[in-house]
Image (cartoon, rainbow, N blue to C red; front, side, top):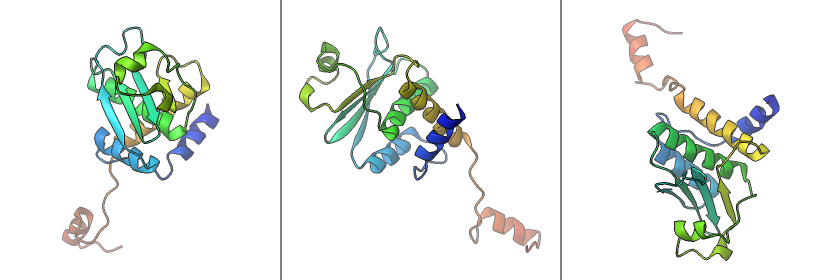
Length: 166
């Protein structure tokens, strides 16, 4: 487990996590990191006998589908899990020839799909890795912002009032 955590920590190097955390802003960071557009798409009823999250990658863009019929924090975690798959460059996937893909994106030619990953269970190594990475992102998002040491910042003003000079 500690090796998995270290690997996930390395994956986050160079990936900025917005403070305060905002999922749309983080999606923009991931899109920039991958050099391609990323679209979040709510899909009601997605988890009814299917994954509660899904990542579809085509040559020019990434799409993340999630079930909006759950709590905000759960929906956010579903999306973070799919983003973790992207950041980890996971490639195994679901059969794209089935009708579910056509229902999600009727104008999409299944032959152009590079990756389809569905969040179903945590039995594979990739699922554990994505879950760990999503949890690390969430933990870093919850960390308080580092105090500003810029001239004129709050700490500088407090130091001025207290006549403190290190």
